[in-house]
Length: 434
Ligand SMILES: [Zn+2]
Image: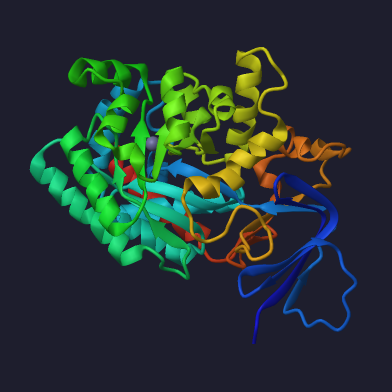
């Protein structure tokens, strides 16, 4: 039998040229695709498998988190208030050395529980043992773009990790009815020397997948790049030819005006991670400048070890508020723009062939439903401003990916959360002993 679901809501948000806010809207979902998206219609004798009524509810495209390291949720709260390099060298790398393959599976599931609960329907992940992360994504029903983190500091290590990266692409790209896609993930210019990045770019060409990399995250990274190569990280990437490919660059905190223009010309996508950049004291990325210059910007949380949550609504709010405060201009990054970064732009930044992030007809049914009848959302004058400035991620009541319900009435439908908390509790106490 064909699955045909009707989802109604007091407000339906979708992306055409602009954001459309439809009051008393509805969606028809057939076999995972949106077949109708618009105002409520008079429907007679239509056979729906299910009707979701949506009174006092708002439906919109799910959030797309374009930069995280999901399994690092195992290290949440373990290393705080430290500079990035010290955080990595003294805290994170030593515990990562103790990780077993299966830990990645459970750690990723922990992250997915949190992401689904907060309305994230798709995420871009970079870590290692990504086979295990892929299994977690497949089972959970979430959409994900996965990349094995590649490090090429010595030749042997570089070749081995590139082989792993290729394996993820070959084994997982397109799996789960297209929910799982893959990228190549050279970690950063400071862990992947130029010759190695050239090799990665060639492999990306032959496998026809995009590249996911950390770029210009800290001032120190930029200074060291200038010392070592005589070029800033973005200049170096341009010289290598990396930016001629499809690239998702995380952070981009320290960019010159010229480099911002390069990112726009090369159509490089940026994953802006305001929460992580603030907490690690890395600085504030020039978001308003990015947008003014036509750079494609999306939003990410980075990992729960540096954030310390995977709450996309929080990133949306930070993205909107930071530029206003910093540049003393409340008109910068209006609510609608902030919401666009987390949905429409997220899908573009992941170079997805599947249509997601809009809720237009013909797109995949990746959607979330907010409940509206709460004191902190009442009265409801402005949408989407209320969503951006007042809503909480815990207001997300229903989550659907590819037409399948992953969260409803507070219950995760595809995951055994109690077991996941138990297993990850055991793992984190084994990894971290003070
Ligand atoms: Zn990162």
